[in-house]
Image 1 (cartoon, rainbow, N blue to C red):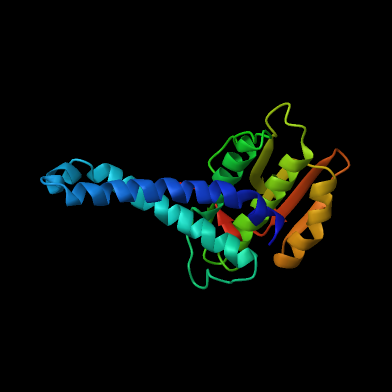
Image 2 (cartoon, rainbow, N blue to C red; image 1 turned 45 degrees about the vertical axis):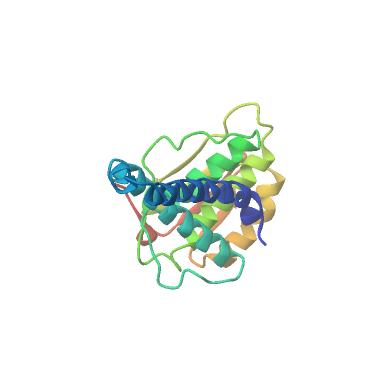
Amino acid sequence: MDALTRGLLPTLLHGLGNCTQLISGFSALLEMPGGDEMLEGRASDLGRTGDEVQRLGWLLAALSSASGAELMQTRRDPRGLAWMVDLVRDAARRSGRPLAPSGRTLPDVQPSSPDGWRVPWAVGSLLWAATQDSNGSSDLSWAILPYQGGWRCAVKGGETVGALLESLTAALPGAEANQQSCGATTLDLPAEWLKDGS
C-alpha cells in the first residue's frame, strides 16, 4: 500500500461510514408508516448523499488503483483532482498538519490524462508528503498553476517529499518533478492532462 493510500484511507472510510449511516436512516424512513412522504421532503439530502457516495467511490477506486488493483479502467471524472485535494486536506487537518486552500479553482482532469487517477494521485501524494514534512505550526501553502504551456504544482517539502519524486515521475511518464534551490518541490505536468476548472 502506498503512503498516500495509507494516510488517506482512515479519513475516506470515515466519510463512507457517514454515508452508510445516512442511507440506513433513509431506509428506516421507508419502513415507517408515512415514510414515503417524509422521504420526499428529504430528496435534497438523498441527492447530496448520492453525490458524496460517487465522490468517495471514485477516490476509493483511485487509491486502490495506485496500490495495484487497477479499478479505474475507463472511469474518468474531471473533478478527480479537486476530490483528491479535499481528501488530503481533511486527512492532514485530522493529523494536525493542515493544508492551506489552493487559492484558485483547481483544474479539471482531462480524458487524455494517464489512467484518469494518476494525476490526482501524484498531486495528492506530493501534498500528503509535504504535510508529513511540515511541523504543523501553520497551514502548508501550495499552488497548482499554468506554467510554461503546462501545469505546475509547487509545495515546500523536505525529506519525505524528496524520497517521493522518482516514484512520481515513474508513475507519470511525461511529468517532471524537481526540488528547487528555494526549498520548493515542483511537479510539472503536460498541458493536455488538465484544463482550467469551471
